Image (spheres, one colour):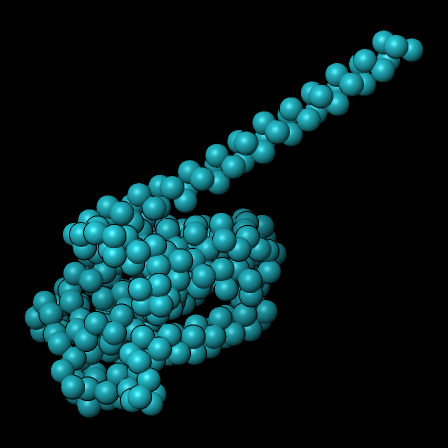
Length: 305
């Protein structure tokens, strides 16, 4: 069951990385996630049913998510709509877009060849899922590491750290923010594409709660592997997605109903938000205690003299 959780975690890793880009790098809560995730699934399944290969369909899914992110970015930067509301507006509009793409609320994949079918048939399905997940995550992490070393990537990170200072130094912050939105939602759409292929269908409601899943995975990854270098931060996101899905898999195997997974996700998110706060408070108290002990010790020495 843990192996199944690892495979599913790798499928969700692109979602986690996408949420990481907006939430951590740009410091923006982007709810477009819940629309771009099923968008990637819808585009992929529809193209595969029309005869396109899984690879081409998934790349088109990335492109669709990229465009959805651009829409949110333009609403935010050009129309000055608050980022949270801009994401909600795009997410709402994408519901209709996804319905038009699929034609109905749910479309099955039927007998089309998915990514795992390119691997030897003798391999177990779970092993195939893990191999495909590792390949895709490796490609995504490698490409992002190279991107963040470019001028555009450095501008994106600088804009997230301090928008005003970045603009003062000549960075076109609006363009950079739109690019961040676009890359984020493109990766989220890729995750939707992978999950749709794994499940064998695309569903109009499959994006509900994905922002909670993404945020929880980001925070879990940061707890597991706290790092400053971008390559390790991205690897931490992959690990966070894996651990999160393993936790959900274990919960289901001990009797938790699938209907309760959403509330379980919310509980996990609350825990990973509160846990670092408790740790910081504990460290602060310990530091204060050591300082007071040192102060008392010095006072005692002076008194003896």
